Image (cartoon, rainbow, N blue to C red):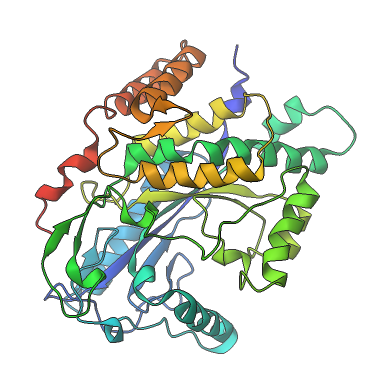
Length: 383
């Protein structure tokens, strides 16, 4: 029987979207929510990010997202602006239209950081928007399974073990939620215009998407060594900060995402692979988040394993391959990716066999495997 506290957790979400004007071009107006911590901006001045409060349920999370989304739309409509509910940007002439977010005062260092990112990656990359989903178990559950003398050490080790499983299985969430196979030619070439259906179902997750200039290889022997391996990339200049670690899943601390805070412990797990879904009014499907929660629960029960440097490199290759539009030749551990996904969901069905709600969620995701939602996105009027 599953421990009831196992189902409990805390949830948060960050959704990035671009503001566009009445001509469906990148908005040139300043960010209009400078006094609202739940409605911020990211790399671009017109890249608006909704940050929900921490919620006790996914229902509460979606209600919060809906409320904030409504507020945003009402305010920007006064400037004849709207939200571009796609991961890939609309047409723009060149990078001069991509205005780095104007942070001043105590936040000025953030602008300097973005300017360094521009030199390393260019501006186009940062127009690719998405949804980040955050989850943590309720400590009551962790206390219920804790055995030992140091709870905080146990908690750090528990999340590190879980993180390894989620990292290895990130491709599964990608193939179920990819939603950005079409793009405007200006994304790759100045002055070009016109819609292209790419070879990828999710450009931001593909080999040409959001990745570092090197392949991060981390030390998973224990939590302290894990943090030290992250710090080493900052010390040698490969990363400006931990925020530049572009992996599909990350462990996050309380407060600012820094080595110092991560050394103290883990607050939550961050899932970064979700595209903004144009078929969903809020850009994300509630059932996809519910499935992610079930996947976390399932993977937390699996045995630990050695996440070697070689396997870490394969994990990233698997994730990038899962971003392809055509998955017919993609294999995971020697098995066709769709078959592999079906097998995992089948194992999850067995685990949750007494939970009718969970089984409905699993069946919803399973039904996507042969006819994924993203295969229909090319029918959209993109520009």
